[in-house]
Length: 198
Image (cartoon, rainbow, N blue to C red; front, top):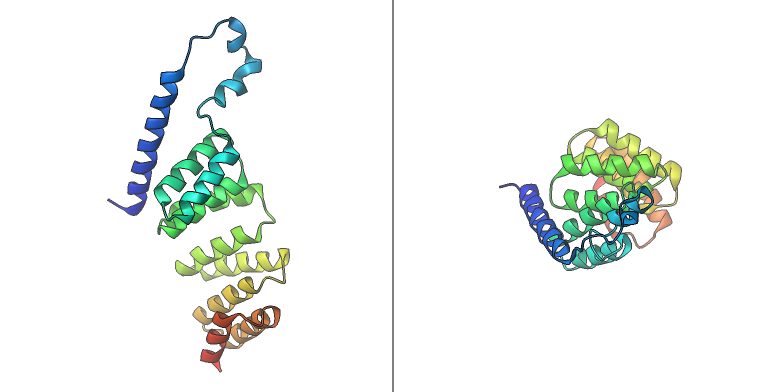
């Protein structure tokens, strides 16, 4: 079984349990008004007692504890309750990427990016996956877009330098590492990579 299949199995089990818990608390509607279209959103939001914000907080805590299966399950529930939330989609993608499921992560990153085109972190994350896959042109495009959004982020310059090293463009990479260090003089990783090229 792949890591992603294990994650999905865990998420499915968690959702099945939550649905079972919810069904146990259901009551018959007392009047027809409950079924009116005005109350459709109310019905949808009764899936769990937690708001999307609370689910995200719980997911963040689970992630900090390295319980990625729980974090992913909570984020999937938050996504079910509040679709089209770029932050939720980004976090789902980030966990998938951390667990090596880059293909699925790309799908979620792209959905998040469609909702939040000016998010430099999504561009950086996509660039990281494309670089790992050897898709240097796509990686370069996303790093360029990230710098268009914020040209003072040293991590973007560092990532760009790493990509340029992979592309055998060492002179350009040196300039990127130097820019990263100029912005953050304590950026040790950038200093190490720069020293390898000089």
